[in-house]
Image (cartoon, rainbow, N blue to C red; front, side, top):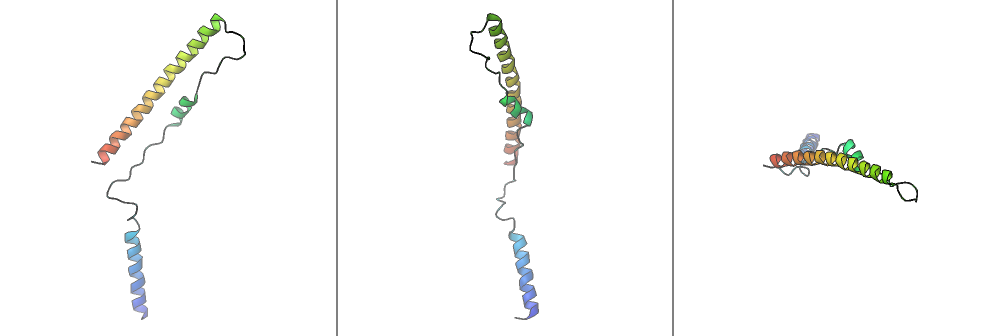
Length: 100
């Protein structure tokens, strides 16, 4: 084989390698990435109202205060859940649109 033929064969192999480089990654559909869950939503999900300390019975005042903290926590988590649902729905709409 002459050096010219070797260079042509090498050039063909390089062109073929570049042409095939993306074949395994593409299937004719767009590549979709979902946005990560925002850290503040993760933190919201991790927050909880701690159990009352001690082993003595709670007073009526302590029970009322605990119920208040639990209700406030529930309202906060409802807001976080609503934001997470909105994030999911917007991403689902983007995926549906991209796959049309």
